Amino acid sequence: MPELTHSQPPRDRRILVLAICCLSLLIVSLDNTALNVALPSVRRDLGASVSGLQWTIDAYTLVLASLLMFSGSTADRIGRRKVFVTGLVLFALGSLLCSLAPTLEALVAFRAVQAVGGSMLNPVAMSIITNTFTEPAARARAIGVWGAVVGVSMAAGPLAGGLLVESVGWRAIFWVNLPVAALALLLTLRYVPESRAPRPRRPDPVGQLLVAVLLGSLTYAIIETDPLFAGIAAATLAGLLLYEPRRREPLIDLRFFRSAPFSGATVIAVCAFAALGGFLFLNTLYLQDVRGLSPLAAGLFMLPMAGMTFVFAPLSGRLTAARGPRPPLLLAGAAMAAGALLFAAFEAETGDPLLFTGYVAFGIGFGLVNAPITNTAVSGMPRAQAGVAAAVASTSRQVGQTLGVAVVGAVLAAGMAAPPAAFVTAARPGYWIVTACGLAVLAVGALTSGPWARRTAERTARALAAEDEPQRPVGAAAP
Image 1 (cartoon, one colour):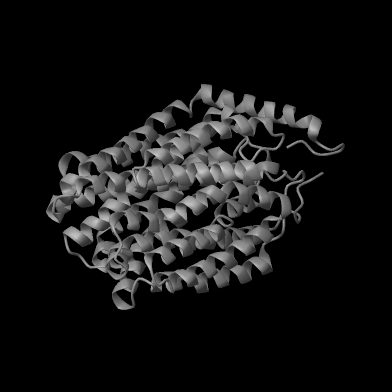
Image 2 (image 1 turned 90 degrees about the vertical axis):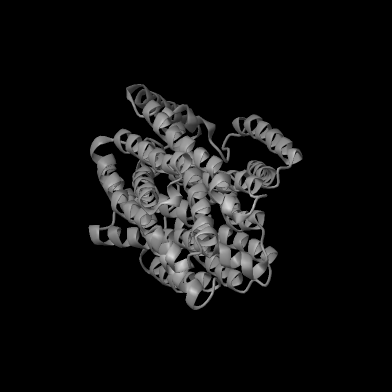
């Protein structure tokens, strides 16, 4: 039974589908980067503490991470375009509510509504792309374009956010999402074909609940330094590892992790996005609260980082297509670690030359890391489970960003008992954490991209096909 979709669309239609999917990534990424610049304004307007600012970011990434795999498997089951359209509507509704939030608590709650919609966008869009671009080289190039959109959002987010905060106010950041979501919705209904997996996976409500409790309790334990919730997180993780392998069709298919490249991509995604979340959080607060820059000026200061991400993301896609994931992963880890090390060891934020050098290095590394993560996650996996595989990679990104903001923010808050002049000293442990994340990208990338790792991926693909064969209906095509 073939994949339920229209026949292979012509090249122009495929490019249009890619553009529509990238629009969804743009509004999700733009919202986060723009909001980072607005955090000091939100704190002044709503009276938020450092932990309150952490929850403003993490409420979104936490709910998003909790629901991504569920949304990916649901889209494979009931229809990718249907779920994608629902996500656009919910994201726009959440954005509207955020713009009207009267208190910090309301803003955090409405950010969660946004995240429910966002969970239906990125993994589903990646699944649509995977099933639209079936040739490996074309898929790698498409993923490179997808990664470049992250660079666009990083470049446009701080600038657009700073301009909106200065001219209208931080609430205008959420208004920008509405016309973009409306355009993406109209184009999706007109041009994106419906598709779903030939053998839909069954819902796993218990697994979904365990994932949500695990991520929620872990984030709360870090931000609020609560050992009780740390214990709940550990117990939930144990329950998840015991329960999921016993299900015929689990929410998290642990068989995927037999592949070293897939496991490596998951770890790298967590580390890379933890580094990004912590790096942006520290720099946003420093530039505005310590240096006294306006939101727009702070956005302009971070432009070198965003520009490098924009330039190197598509280059990473082409490099991955031509040479495989190993070169971009090694370069990414080295560049991210070097950029963060300038802040950790040399106090780069106190002098503009080192500051901009750190931004350039970190931006190059982050631009290089996205394409090999996504390409490795979806390559070699059954197309019928493309949504689930892509959702694991997307979940890893959001988990990383959640933990990065939570851990680095907690370290910063612990050192901020002194006046604001001590910010550089208080932030230094956070930058060492970011440096360690970059080194982890380098080490794990080297370990999981060589010949041994490729052999584990081949064995996993054969095992998945063999283990799924008895469950496949008669006449069904092999994945």
